[in-house]
Image (tube, rainbow, N blue to C red; front, side, top):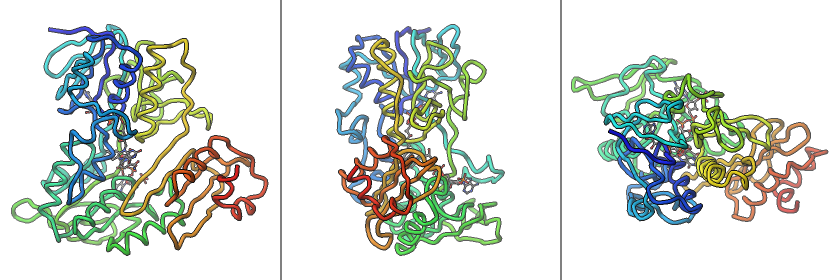
Length: 426
Ligand code: FAD
Ligand code: NDP
């Protein structure tokens, strides 16, 4: 049993949705394109799962956040795929790939053949078991990567109202979920191994602003340690978590956000991998010219910092997907991807954006006791990264522009004095 397509997108997440939109914009014919996804629903904006989806009142639910509403473009419902002659093969895992024969074998036993393959398999959440901790399959332990996880989390939150949650990990999932738990009237303690939250991006000064804000909302922080085991009652329900430093924290529920691993296993030994992802060139093309990779799973050349990077953010997924489709459909008109890394988050009434690279000296600016502040990263005498909390649209555009321009900085003190004004006047 088998079907053949000109283009196959493997994976049905953010990158898949934006790639499908781009294929249609560039005139793909009916019957040429197929999307195969393990998830049972059409591509959606994954960031909604840790934000609107977890709200106690008027929460976001599908079909409201199918791609491409995240960029204020049309919403691609299952009907849209049908109308454009795109085959959606949902709830179907691909269990093996053969890039030499150009075939994919699904868990249902079907062989799907392609001429061009776009790999958009994203990533999976790391499990506590991978750090030697047992018990994370317990009912009240939640991870958050897909819709099924989000539904489970909502149920566990509802049954833990007024109780205690322990959030493991001080990264994106930890920070966004902790905020949602507070809004759901659950007492939160965050546990992570680093000295401060968001350790890979935030400076200690930036982190302390967010930690103080969270503390004012009742969140407690236990830093510099990790979870070692769970305590269970006679019904196998978790009652507490034990930490390496000897602390025991009562817990009605636990959320784990300790990072991800890209889903590359189908292609190991077949495609070149680098930095944990599938290595691609500036056209998002892998070491096999018929296979492209985009989104969280792709390691691509970031021109502005002259290095290859694998980014785990939605803007990169959207833009890399569109770029790959342009390179596939109009190769002669498509130059190399020139991407400015962009990360953001929104929690409580806060909202920040970051552009570029967080390397070199850091120059903070603005009012760290107020609502708006930021930082520049200066490396080898040039601005390479910018961060801003509480900015306006114009201000965010200004820091993005300055990061792309990489202006030379002669005097760091002068940059500090000018602060945001430096970006606004350049
Ligand atoms: P995904 O969106 O993860 O899609 C991968 C798809 O591939 C899934 O549908 C999966 O089921 C499918 N798949 C994998 N293997 C197979 C297989 N073998 N067979 C069939 N299907 C397969 N980024 C931001 O910049 N801002 C945010 O605010 C933000 N919030 C986030 C909130 C949450 C809860 C999460 C989990 C992530 C968030 N991100 C955010 C990150 C962002 O969502 C990802 O970078 C983005 O989804 C990556 O897109 P992708 O298409 O590469 O992967
Ligand atoms: P992150 O990589 O952001 O953070 C993981 C955190 O967990 C780090 O602080 C990490 O520390 C810590 N950690 C690692 N191991 C342990 C351990 N054994 N015990 C306790 N803490 C540990 O990953 P997340 O899981 O938070 O997010 C998953 C993905 O979702 C990421 O790709 C992220 O980009 C994406 N996401 C993005 C959002 C956004 O952009 N706004 C929002 C939500 C999710 P260390 O740094 O030392 O490894």
